[in-house]
Length: 211
Image (tube, rainbow, N blue to C red):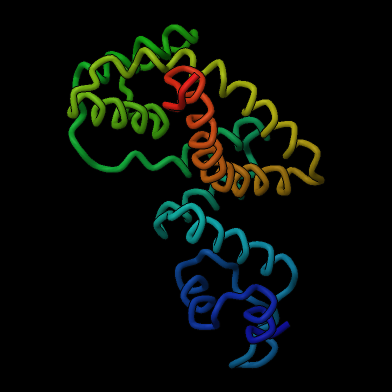
């Protein structure tokens, strides 16, 4: 297919496709003439993934490049690639870390049998430390008390996530399913958590109605 058809089938404008090509996020097509290139279903698949990372995940072009590099790394096991992808799509943001929040994260990961010398070595632990630092900055110094119950609840969700993507076909399908599933899943979890809060609030606090 030519770039126009690739645009039509993906819903991505031609100028955006050309930008992704220049940035190396999309492999070059096969030249059929000096000014024309042919693209196939693999280009369409990669383009949809890039669009999901940008639109759904809100990732920067640099972060998208890291995700794609993790996906394309043929030297790692599937488990290692999944971990690399999770690191790449986890964006801790910038800001000063509260030393006490860092200690909270270190204590948490040690309780899980892990050791980290520096939480900033991992995007995931860095992101967690940033969140706890923000909590401390607004007076919620004991938010870390929620980490263990959060983890227990999220293990069920993580199991469902992995089983969902493991049923897909090739390793590439599994990796891409994890990327898109994690990004979409994060948005779904936010919404479902708010619904659960309503139910929990009614049960624990009451809805204010007369008995």
